[in-house]
Length: 339
Image 1 (spheres, rainbow, N blue to C red):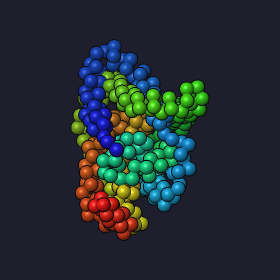
Image 2: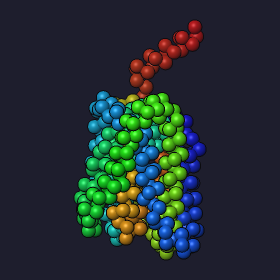
Image 3: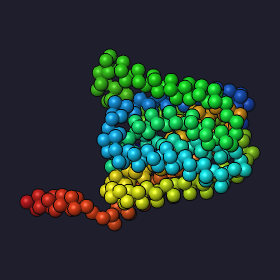
Image 4: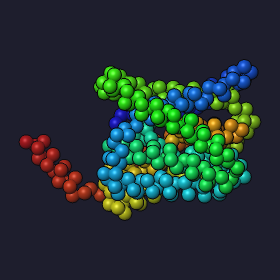
């Protein structure tokens, strides 16, 4: 899988959107009305994400049941518990940062982690197969995680939380399902896959950046007034990625996964879905802009780290024990080439 310019420079685009938002926020009329556009922009972005998720392939998530079970256990059991502990150790003096950190770490990525899997020469089809499972589980478990973990840090209005999840997540999710049923009947499956899907990455990324610009235009004062507070995120975020990466490597070797499958396990358990939880944070915690800021700043750390991890995996690949099956295949390929 080739990495495109959007994915390659995503962190720079996000940083640019932050800067533009801060500048526009100095204009009073923009600052007053920018917040009205944040959630609509995010809903459009999430609709594009959901539209690309192949839910009809959900049963494929469990064909390699061992990989699905291990990846799911790390993503939905270990990672939330570990994020809570890290937040307690590093961020408990600032509850808003602690909540934002937990929200960032409990939702696995559902799209561009495949790009990093491709860079690392991982098993991209295997990674893609568990994408529907990850999406369904995080939609169902996110409210539960917030009530269990974030509920110990601050008072959470459970009705407002469920209302936010329904409005921001389930409505675009439902519309995407309707689109997948109606459009192929009207225009054909080819039209949807060849005309619409190729444009969705740019659509999603454009609306994500518009949402970030709007957010920083309306709430950027919090960052300007506390420029060093977000530096507290660096240690727990980096520690999260390092520990989860090591666990993925150890688990992959313990279960005798191939390099390809182990790389996929690493990246499916490391990449996070910040846009999805950003929409929830803005609607559930409208009076706590620092929570939303964590979910914007987080990817600025995450994306370079995932790039480093992808190239680290390539170096590990050179020393990975070669299975007998692959060795035989290489020998066969050599014989065929010589002929």
